[in-house]
Image (cartoon, one colour):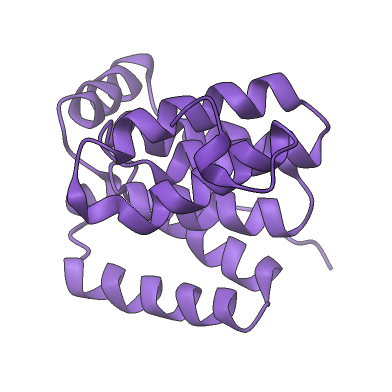
Length: 170
């Protein structure tokens, strides 16, 4: 008995270039495939629940799928990076937190989590840089008060102080 395998032709260079053009002009794969925002939100909710249940591998798979379909939603990068961080894959998590930071330069959370990864890898100077950057972002808006307190506390720990007010960044 012989089995035949059907193969699809690979896209041409022109088709690939057209796809890159569409994606780089603000479109997402989800949009091009006609997937709704509602379905993305449902998948995000499931991934978020998995993360909350410490099912990081399962959550990471969901966030990876979401990222493949929508490369512009920073929540998906944050979720994916958070899973990697919890799985002690700090170097990889840093890359995704970095992209999340670029997608919203006003959000102090990515630099704060980047600092946590640097601390876990023993990179105190890089952690300090991330915290100082995050503090600049956090102090710019009243909505980030809790993040600012946490970053001040981390910075105080790095500086060997038990009181965040003693930190030189204050």
